Image: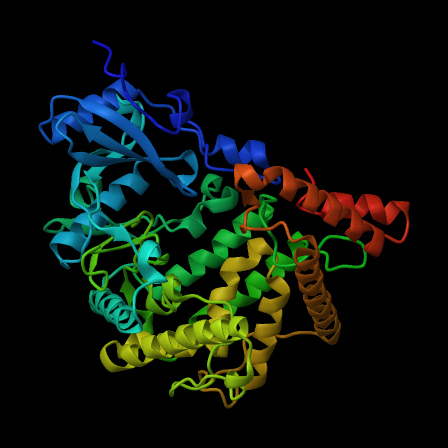
Length: 526
């Protein structure tokens, strides 16, 4: 019998299940599609899915989600039951390790920390050893509705209740500390680990794999100390620079062009080499924030499920792929479901409506109320953290400090952040004597010529950031940080981008040679 016969898929033909079909890219499209294509045997998937829950057959397969890294299918059985099949794309991370760690992490979160995480029915992290021909996870379909569907209609009090539950989940995560930095696995997948059930092994953190870093021969842990972990990040960026990797997505600034900042291997190696001499001495002062913990780094409203009958109650949190045990101070921040466009309140007290609120027109009042609600929830999140999750609060508050910034920026050198790193290192020198640093001579020496070059690079870097902001504002076609748009928007966005590039070249290129240099430098021109 052909198990695929009669399978109903309201959105896609069978071949489209393998491909990415949820949008287009404005540049690098061929590469983007290639790293999101997964070949697998559909008949085997349906058989496996039916067998793990004791159904006779699967009658419908529907591609329900296509994020950056996975294919997710909803499989409906002949008796009406539904389960989820998740197949990682080639860009999801290292084969075997990413899936093996995701399953172990979900098990740990669900059965050790009692967090609302879907149950896994079956899985395989060895594509070459299973009949499907791909890695997979078969899990229960998360009950409830996504928070996105109800957030705009629920009351403020209900939003506060959701916020409180998230804070409690984060409290449990922050309280669960590990002795190493890396990713969580079953001990069977890490033969050297000797533990009752779980152990920390090599990291699956995206920063060690994305943008070509996955092909580098670098150390990926586990690391027993935070200094070794921070050092490994800098050495990762050194290897990326030496291999000639370039950040392929929307850059922070428009560099490389005429009269702009010119990133180079020597500049990257110099800044990272200087950081390595400083790394043990510039960690955040609050050592409690150095703890190795698991954290959900993408807690947006599509990953949170609530009870449709009681939308103030969280019933599930999904997408734990590549969650790793990393330093707390590098992971915490306002959860994405609370993000908003607008200023952050300067103080933690009560947020007020604008003094001229009564004289605003109805549309302005609506916007002011929305901003007021978002700012209130932002402040309330921090207050709740202060009350029940003090170390998390301290870590968030510490993100504006020099020590935090100089510890985090080295990991961004692939994205040409070396001028900022150099600037931060010079700031450390200024604060060395009275900034609580160790009683030893400052480990770096900058010549007057070096300082002059670094200051010039910093000015050009900032200029490139302004240029990028102006380009995006003028072009108006960017809906996503990697250039992805919907099929419906593609032609319009493509036209807007082409016209935006043309206007940019007319403004910035002073002659034919600069025109050619800018065409080569712009990441949006294939």
